[in-house]
Image (cartoon, rainbow over all chains, first blue to last red; front, side, top):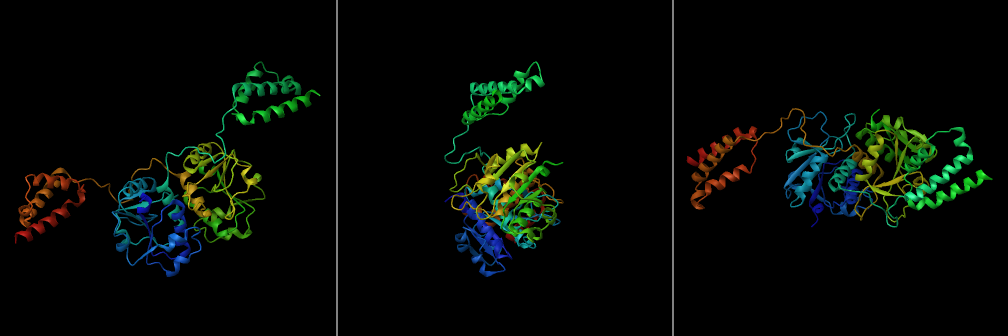
Length: 242
Length: 242
């Protein structure tokens, strides 16, 4: 079993089926298959059209009458909150940090991640089942997130790979830089063009050549483009001289 | 000017005004105020009710006829894509890595982050204005994200603080652990209770005391809870002896 299969996303008293569909879609996007719902307002949530590509997540969602039952098999229960003016009785962790703790726990056991209703979030009763609370770091000016977006951001962070480095699509070679000789050929052509265009006569400086050389090197020319640039410059130079 | 003010979120040919509202809401949640739209399908997008708490973002959105105009003042233009079966001609970067490059650029200049239509993403024409492409790392089984959720995840990553550590809400003291003396008092009471309950007689071991001591220490008792535990144990002990 992958550790992602051990997460239970628990939607408590959700009002809008479209939001439940959006949550399911985000779960499917990030590879978390197990959805649980506690007392949704609309029992027909499984038909939500917003669950694009995630109908299997909604179809296999487990229905519960209480938070206690929905988190029964979990060793860690985490509630989400926008904080706001509420007085909290729980330790509160920012998503970046809290996700690390959840990931660690998922290696060996089940974790429940609770999301409350769109209107009022999780109740204090729901909070009382939680070991700690998680909040997404938002701007103070607008702390209230859309439910589907909040689920997406939390699951993204759980699936996040902090060691990610540049990657390339199939069929594209890693772009290597032009060689010094190629760069110098381009520099030389450019200088000829500048001479031919009268630029160097109009703005003479003692270190014109060096300036130009530095200028061209700052371009970081890709090796694959050298031919094209040489062609363009030769054409310009030809035109300048004729 | 904050570096977040230098980002332009550019929605190209978006179909559903509700998605534009959701994008605006996410922008407001993460503190990015500057929205630009290119040829939306519905001109009345500014009234989208999904922009909860973000009507100012929609109201001040700038309208453009072409991608070229919408990105004109930006020194870095990044397109988003789900990749899929498309053959890409651009370097492609995972969000975790690409966001670092965008953040760096935002320190000194404007950056455009482009999102395409719900149906087909960004066109090749739109791609041609981009320096490179960004993709959100999704599960291969469902790579297509909802537009509002994709915007939220990207902006979250841009605003993300990798150094985040535990924080606490107003009014909750950092929880300190019980002192060794307190833990020992609890251990002693527990041992008395074990003796009184006959437990130690039923399962005698030579190192019972040490086992119990280790057991209690692994609980990591909070200092503020010591009194309550002592009270409970004393009560149990009293009951056991009477």
